[in-house]
Length: 587
Ligand code: PEP
Ligand code: MG
Image (tube, rainbow, N blue to C red; front, side, top):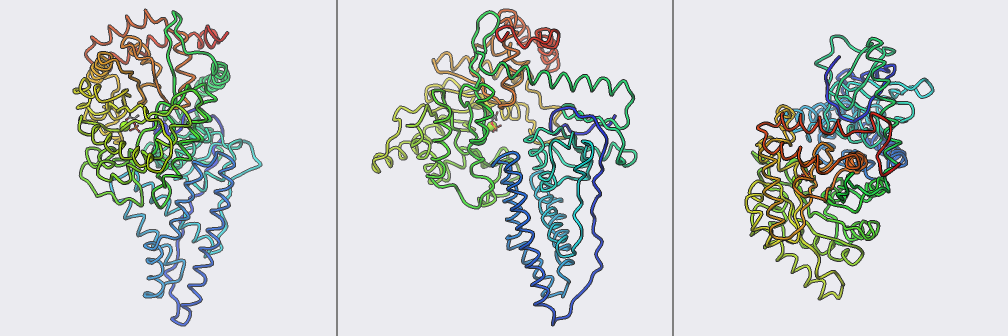
C-alpha cells in the first residue's frame, strides 16, 4: 500500500491505463535571418490553432460540469495572450534565431522552473498550466500526435505523472473509474475538476513507488484516505468492493433525506445551510435540501478574469442567488482575498506572512472604492430576497464601525440614484481570529449576527498554516483551545441576544454535532456535499445523550482524546451502516 494525498473522495477498483509522459527532446535548431517572418507566421498559426482547440475543450467541459470549472480554460487562453510569455518566445526567435518550437520549449522551461522554485502551491499549479498550454502549442508546431486516452475499452484507472486540466477535460467520466498522479496536491486545478466530476483521485504517490506502474496492473484507489494498492490480494479487493458498494448505496439512501427536516430523535432542530462559491453550486445545495446560504464566498466572482467585476455584474449574481434561495436567508460575505486567494489583476504585495498580512476586510478598508461597489451591489440585491452582509476576518470593533461607514455611503449613493434596498439589512461578522473571540462581547454590540469560521480560527488559534501540508497533522479542529474559543463566542452571542452560526469545515463534520447541541448552536453552514451526511447523523442522534458526551469532551485535555470520543459516539449512532435505514424520520 502506498500513502499519497486523498485529493478527490471515493473508492475505485480497476485496471491501470498509464498515460505516456510526453517529454519532448528537441534539437537546438536555428533559423536563417531571412526566414524570420516565416518562423513568426508558423508561431502565430500555432497560437491560433491552440486557442481554437482550448475554446473547443472549454465548451465541452462546460457541458460536462458547468460554467464555474470551465473558467480554468480562460486562464489557459490568457497565457497565450500573456505579453511576458509571448515576448520571451518572440525574443528568442528574433534575437537568437531559435526555431519557433525551440523558443517555445525554452520559454516553458524558463517559466516553469521559475514558478517551481517559489514556495507557493498556487504558483506551482500555475507552472502546470503554462506547461499544459505550452505543450499544446508545441504539438501544433511539431505536428506531433496527441496522446489519446482509450475510449472504447473497459473503464480504467488513469495513471499519469501529472494530469493537466485539458487532459482532464477530455475524460469521459463513465470510462474513468479513478485517477492516480505522481505529483500534485489538493489545491491543483486538476483536483478541483476531479472533485467536480466526482472521480476519486489520489495524488503525490511518486516517492512511495518502488517501480513504475504498468498499464494493465490492477489498482485500488482510496481517495478518502489517500491510499493506493497495486495488484493487491483478494482480501483488499473484497474489502474495497464492499466499501464501494456501501458508498453507492449510502449515496442513494441519503438523497431520500433532502426534504426531511434536520431534527434529533428527541426534537432538537438544526437549520442546515450551504457554503457556496457560485450560483451553480446553489443548485446542488438546494437539491440536497439546503435551507439557504450561510456563506457565499464572493471572492470567486473576482477570480479567473482580468478586471474587477462591476457593480451590475455583481448585482446580477447576488440577485439570482437571493431569488433562488426564496424565503431562506443568504449571507453574502464581502471580498476575502489575500493569503492563499490571489487575483492576477490585483497586484498584492509580496509578504513574509501572507495569512497574517494584507487580506480580507483589511484590503476592503484600504480600497474603499472597491468595497463600496460590492456593498452597493449587495444592497441592491437585498430587495430580491433575504440578504445579509458578513465581514471576513474581523479583529476589532473599529473595523466593523469603519466597514459600516462605507455601508452608509453605499446606502446614501443608492438613495441619490433612487434605487431601492433593504435599509434594515442585517450585518454580521465572521469570528475567525482569536482576537475576535476574546472581544466577542464587544463585537456582539456592533453586529446583528456572528458566524464562526473554524477554518481560519483553527489556523490562528493553533498557529498552524492551513495550507502547509508539512504541518497538516497539527491542524486539529478538536483541540481543547478551539473548543474553548467556540464556547466563548457562543456565550457572548447568547448574552447579547444575537444569533450565531458555524460556517467552517467543522460544521460539515458529523462528529461535531454533540458540540453544537451542548453549546446551543442550531445554524450550521457547510459544503453542499456534506449536507445530507450531517442531516443523517442528526436524525440518528439523541440530543440529551450527545450533550452529556460533549460535556465530557469539554473537560478532555487533548485533541486526540476529543476526536476519539466524538468519533466513537458518531459510530455508535450510525444506524444506517448497521441496518441500511437512512434515518427514523425518513422511513
Ligand atoms: C473559515 O475560515 O472557516 C471560512 C469559512 O472561510 P474560508 O474558508 O473561506 O476562509
Ligand atoms: Mg476564513
